[in-house]
Length: 115
Length: 110
Image 1 (cartoon, each protein chain N blue to C red):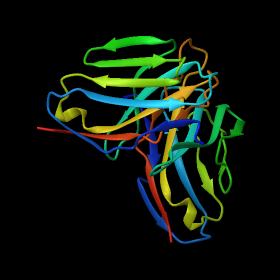
Image 2 (cartoon, each protein chain N blue to C red; image 1 turned 180 degrees about the vertical axis):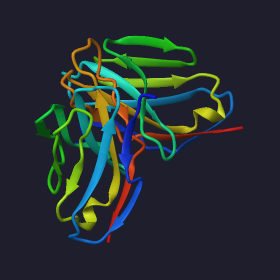
Image 3 (cartoon, rainbow over the protein chains, first blue to last red; image 1 turned 90 degrees about the horizontal axis):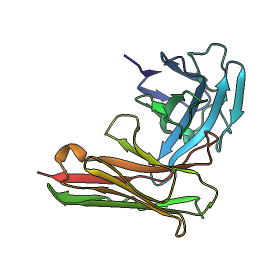
Image 4 (cartoon, rainbow over the protein chains, first blue to last red; image 1 turned 135 degrees about the vertical axis):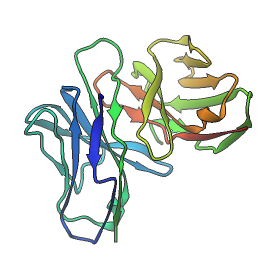
C-alpha cells in the first residue's frame, strides 16, 4: 500500500530535549516536505526537499533541522524544543515532473507537546 | 494579511443539504487551486483541483474559481455524514510551495 509513515503519532517532551520525528514514504517520490498545523493558521511549511541531499527552508524553519540522506526518508529534528513548537506535524511527499498541480500525499501526523 | 483567507467555521448542516465553502486569496500569480479534505486524526488528502477560472465537477463535488475576484469555492451536494471533515483550500504557483487556508470544519448531521 502506498503510504507516508510518520513516527511517533504522539510525543510529549520537555523544553530543550532533542527529538527526531521520522518520515518514510514507499512511493519513490522525489519531493518531501514537513508542515505544522496550528488552529487558525492552517498548514505552514517548515522545510522541503526536492531530492536526496537537496533541502530548503519553507515559511517557518526556525528551530528545526532536516536531512535527506536517502530518497525514502526525511526526518525532522528539533535540537532544542520550546513550548511554541507544540503543534501537529505532517510529513508529505509528491512526485515532481508531472503536469498539473502538486498532489501531496500526507502522513497521519505527529502530535507534539513541549512542556 | 494572510495570503489565503478561509473562514474556519464550524459549519453544521443536515444530511442532504448543500455545503458551500470558500476562500479568498491575494496573490494573483497563483496557478493551481486545490481542495484537500482532512478527517479527524488523519492527514489531508487531495479532493479536487483546478487551474483555470470556471467550474469543475466530480460527482457530488463542484470546485469553482473566479480569478478576477480572487475567490474559490467548493460545493458539496446531497451532503452525507461521511462528508464531515475539515476542508482546506490550497493554492500554488506551480513550484511545490503550497499556501493553505486555515480550513473549515464541516459536520453533516444525520
